Image (cartoon, rainbow, N blue to C red):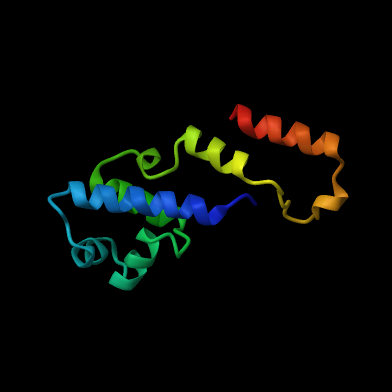
Length: 112
C-alpha cells in the first residue's frame, strides 16, 4: 500500500480539528462518549494508530458529519501517491509487475 501512515496522519488531524471545533471538546470526553480509551484517541489523532471503519463512523455520527469529513481529500491522496516512488502490492513484490502494468494501475488510481 502507499503511505498509509500519511493517510492516518491526515485522518488524525481531521479528527482533532473536528474535536476542537466542538467547543474545544477534550480528548477524554470524546473518548468516553464513543467508548475508547483516551490513549487510543491520542494515538489516532497523532496518526500512530489505525482507525477501524466502525470507529470512524461512530466519530462521524458523534459530530453529525459525513465520514468523508474525516478522510483525506482526493487532492491529498493524489499528493501522497505522487510522492511515493515505489508502490507495494499486497501479495506481489514490485519486481513481479511489469512497468506497463504499474503505469496502468497508477493511472487508474489517479482517476478516482
